Length: 129
Image 1: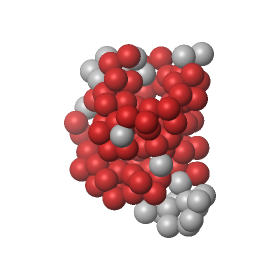
Image 2: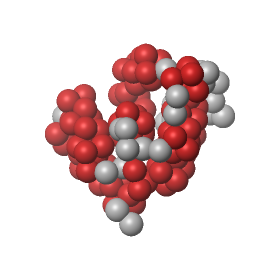
Image 3: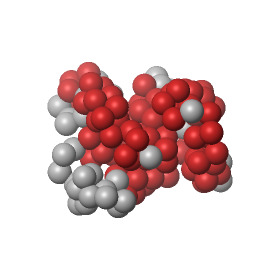
Image 4: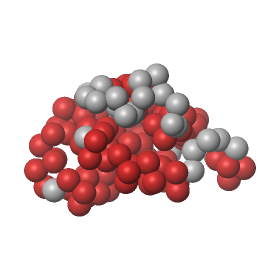
């Protein structure tokens, strides 16, 4: 994917990290882990352009202030975000390799502590199918 194509989308690295830092605790480990997996797959030069397009679409939805269910809604506010991220993960799962998982787990552990890795086992299990 060219720099021009990336710059034409609503997604930027800066807006991704800003949203993630602001809402990480509220969103929870699963949403954050799914977003991190996609982010690190996007950064991987082995990920093809078509997969990066899917990832950028999901991450753009995640960072968008306009959601089907507003992020400020208690309990369910990030469920639509998780759905969009999970759908993208299912489509690009073959590009979520051990390096991508390792980077995402390390960042998640930094933010939520090592016990947070127990909360994401179901996502990893689905990726390994």
